Image 1 (spheres, rainbow, N blue to C red):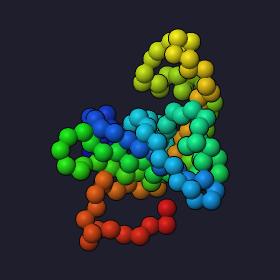
Image 2 (image 1 turned 30 degrees about the vertical axis):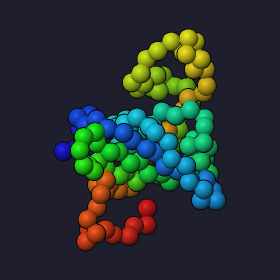
Image 3 (image 1 turned 60 degrees about the vertical axis):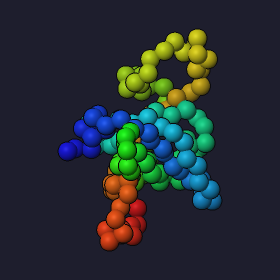
Length: 134
């Protein structure tokens, strides 16, 4: 199953982890990723700590835990390659549509694109764990 199909067919909770230039880690709840035609993965984000960290350190990990019993899911190891601010594509990709004036949602939004370095299951058996340089 393609990764894009996996995320279309599974519900769950996602967490995007980033670190600043000194290695201080942040984790934030994020929606499922968007899979782009150029094989990048994109997330919509506001100009908060996650976005700030990515300006100094392009590496991130997205952890997705499937809804249901047990510990099923994916870990995506990512590297930021570019971003766009307030573009038409960003608004086309938004899954939640609401009146921004009503909700006070006037903060700048960014569409941040990542290259996928590698994927691991949520829980990896000890004999399959390997060190990576990603």
